[in-house]
Amino acid sequence: MEFIGLLIMVFLILLYVRQMKPGKNINQISTSELKKHLGDTSKQFIDVRTPGEFKGRHIKGFRNIPLNTLPKNMDKLSKDKEIVVICQSGMRSAKAGKVLTSSGFTSVTNVRGGMNAWSN
Image (cartoon, rainbow, N blue to C red; front, side):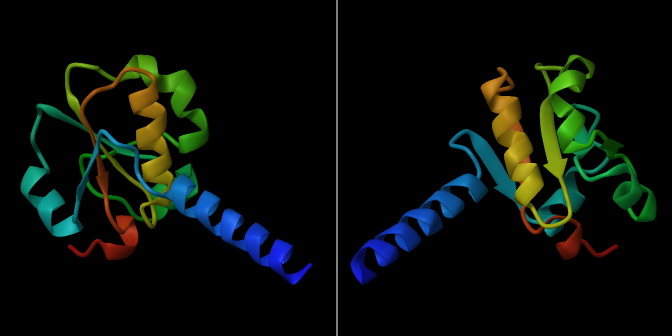
């Protein structure tokens, strides 16, 4: 019985890690690398946090499209421009990246560490 419990725990951990890591075609950048790209009009900057989180603190130039509304708002995004996604910690934005790439967006970048790692 102990072995089965251990096996289930390992499976759940692997499932969790797989769910949280970014997809294959999603670039990763740090918040310090992000600073070099801000203001670049050839990119789309999307914050996938809730409206309350966004209102409390956000980076100028980012547009708020909460993760749960992303599928119905994809028509507002261009597939011809790179999309840079951010959230609070990098987990929701990694998930957003997977949603975007599975919908045909080919240039997606996730900001590692999200707003937790951001400093002005």
